Image (tube, rainbow, N blue to C red):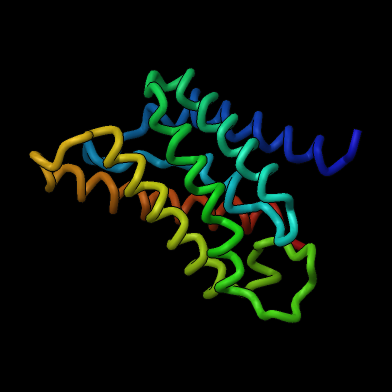
Length: 167
């Protein structure tokens, strides 16, 4: 087996267990729930096969759905995130950069990395909470859930990335 595959599988399991056992029980002010497992898709390097990103994304979303009792919500949202990730990543890098460049603070710089994470996390939270509520009747709660979860998730992702890639 490839060492990269084993690292990716370990990250998959750690993020799934962290989300299912700890983060699903956190609801700050009744709105903000950290969705750290989106970091899994955000961390795919530049030339990773697009079909591989979609498969990994769908499997993680499906696994989160099983543990969180949200049938299909995380799977659909993660699959869309996996579809968009390579194209959004291309917006934040130079054309002549390394073909296997990972999205990280030390490769993109702190500002570009935070913008990259904000864009993908916002899209993820927007779709996740739109599918979950499936109505705009209570749009204030929906908006606060999207923004609160996005801010909390971005902070956690940047902290985890800083701890994971510190050199």
